[in-house]
Length: 98
Image (cartoon, rainbow, N blue to C red; front, side, top):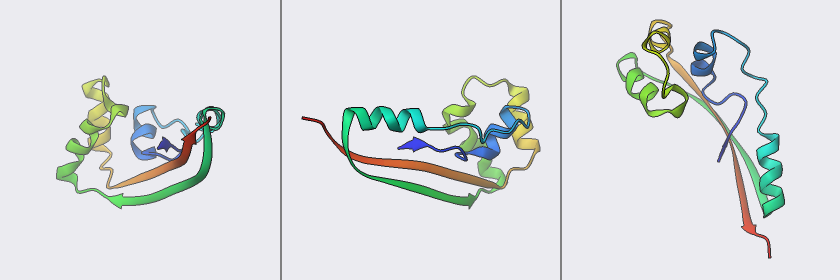
């Protein structure tokens, strides 16, 4: 599983002060896997889900995106009242090259 450009975009936009975070590309990572594996299939997984306000702090604390962030930056996330989270992943299925 490799994060895509829209993975947890709501959190990344707040952490990075509203900057456009869609310029992230996982192309180099995918190319690396193609060099090391005999890739059988690549699947994109994209969905959004609602998160209840009282559960948001638990969600925020479990993602490495927020680890090491200042309390002020985390408070920005909570004050923004993020209610929807976007998941954008690339699943690579492959076998070790012989």
